[in-house]
Image 1: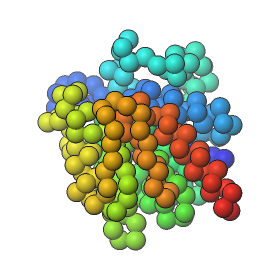
Image 2: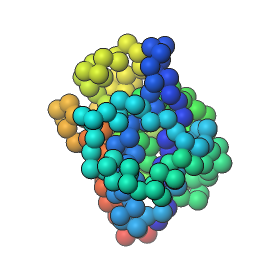
Image 3: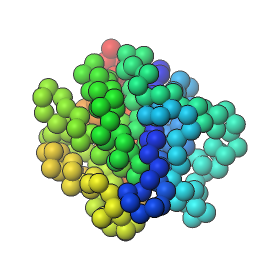
Image 4: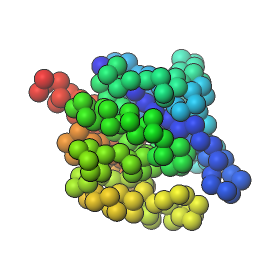
Length: 230
């Protein structure tokens, strides 16, 4: 099985002058879930090369076992430093795609015609897609059969409450929860910062950084079911 992981190349937190990027746990945890399952993982980003890590995600209080493992894994670090350009990947070469979050994707991937077309290509060809934390917001312009892909679907993502707690409600270009509701999704959530993932058909979404592992596991479970059905 081949999984494509798509990371942001955006490193500016609005006009605050602060840095952002992808959330390290949301990459590290799924990466090792996939690797430990024997899956072939390819990393991509809009600009290619080393994607920006949100500095906040690497603070002492945010450390996780997956991140500790990543810091000891030279091959994983090398893979991250050499992501392929998003424009150069094709959905037909992969079985599924996983988007880690962090605030970065809300600026670049959410508005990227390349990312939008890629997600539509995966979904239109009957393949599952998975997005965690802020990344479900990347679906805002993604359509399926002429309607928003998330319309009528059960989804989750970074909540308004979580965004308020990190004090970025007025910095982000949109709020993930509000945007998914506006598009007609059925938004589900648990208490802030608790692990939670939702699978609806071929769409897997996770609520927050703590949901990275369960989101990746939900995708593997879905892939196993798809293989059985095939």
